[in-house]
Length: 329
Ligand SMILES: Nc1ncnc2c1ncn2[C@@H]1O[C@H](COP(=O)(O)OP(=O)(O)O)[C@@H](O)[C@H]1O
Ligand SMILES: [Mg+2]
Image (cartoon, rainbow, N blue to C red):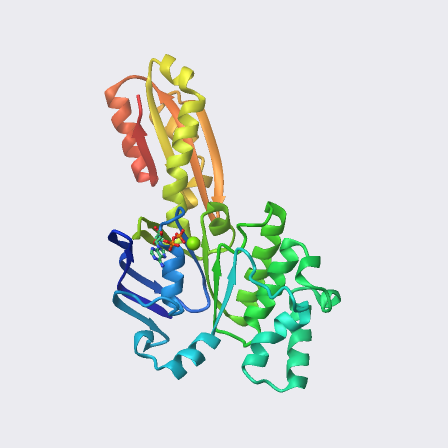
């Protein structure tokens, strides 16, 4: 468990001080995949660097497994860091070392005996499907292969945490998917807590259990992915669904309502029930269904007669059916 309380990080820049993190409060559960999303400059890397103490916070506390990491001695800090693996956008492999020796490197630093290193490196190579590349050099590998070497290296000391800073941002979509699958399987297999920074929504959607949204050093949202995406997708879908049928909506004589269905209501035949119950015609102008994890999110633009009594009854019915409704015309 990682508990972050009132975290603040201020940098002294040339002519001013700059607050890169502003009163961040987070609780990251063990064994989960946590995403941190935000635009460039939002403070994502700074937050990650505070978590592994490469950066010292200006204010606040970070507790990892019940220990305040601000109070660690140098020696404790070294042990603590062994428990945290890290991977980066540009892989950070040692170019003069083979794949094998790159993965062996952290084990050598931890003074693991040679035979044990061999066994462990072979295991890790198999884990990341690179057993045939042991004697290759990083320059001979594709981006995806390089990142897999970096993942194997990060896992060498059996860390409890894996921090990923834009780990797929330099990769094409297909390779990104493969790396995300690998991270997902590592999370399951070893119960490693993964914290993953990205500026791509799709990455969060693909593998994260929770998400923290940073804007200008402030936390706008932290919690379950599904709730975050429902809000996010609602905005995106609304704009696109309405814009796509703008001409039709403009020419409607009735009331136009924008509906958002979530959870189980998305599968229920709401519109036909509405039509039958109130004995009205419902004209469907546009619609779309999407799934976010195991949650179904549906959006519909409908038109009903321009009659306030019918409108009120419709809104009442929708509310009872847990469908969000907004009259847009
Ligand atoms: N060492 C530093 N000195 C001064 N400013 C910094 C330093 N590190 C980061 N910053 C500033 O803090 C802000 C957040 O940076 P960063 O955490 O790298 O953002 P992100 O990873 O979300 O792109 C940026 O505006 C950056 O310029
Ligand atoms: Mg960054």
